[in-house]
Length: 182
Picture 1 (tube, one colour):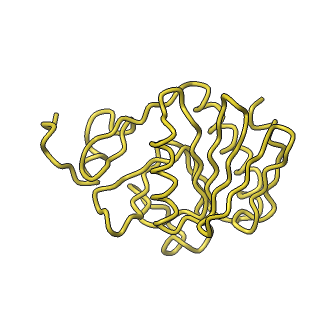
Picture 2: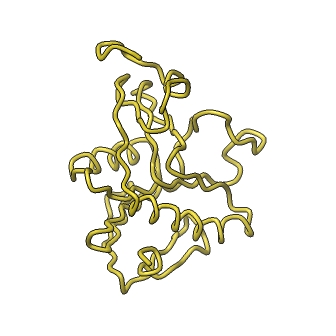
């Protein structure tokens, strides 16, 4: 394995054992700690999104092991949102990359895991906004709420009685928040 002082390159993450369990923060491994509940919620949302995205051919939905490298001023930053969406027409010739996604998704989703801190999640949200992600959903299994964040600094808070919308980012997507937590 690599010594703690060695800085890794993004491609190194694709080749190390258990690389799927890590993000890369400025060349240093950062364990992505995911609990069963948060993984289940992410998978549920991935399915709900795919049920709209695929039939309408809107683009591509990816799960929690997909790496994104869309941070131009931080070339050794690799994030793995729990769910992300890339619109049709963004990949060259509509070919999904074999490795990392090298552009900012339209939507990223972070599902809070038991070991996540507010600060860690807020850092990721700000990184996504800085990279050009148009819509970010932060899902809290504990409170059964969703915080919607946008680059224009507007935000919305949804509870289990509200409806989550893909807005103009994932047109046609809408579901009761409670369906995500069932």
